Length: 120
Image (tube, rainbow, N blue to C red; front, side):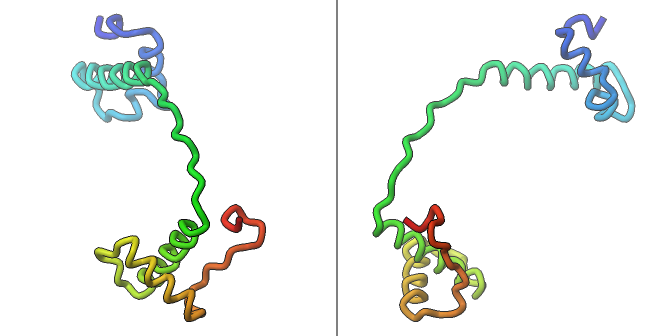
């Protein structure tokens, strides 16, 4: 009587020993059965209501922005190694990275391969 209120595909999923209720519930009761069925039904309803959003346009970065981003990445790496990332802003990480680049510090282990997607 309980199962006949639900779609056939959901009942088949429920009865499947690999992924059904037998895998999720140790002791089967009417309450656990209806809870499982209601949760799965709500999941499938939400999937059916899904509307794909349009993709955002790809943004091209300027050379200056790429340099600033690379410096921030290097600065973040240095801050992580030093153990002081709490409250670190993008600008602070970029400043650390710029100082690392200027000093040519061997601690910075990031090397870009020629022809990689980051080397434009």
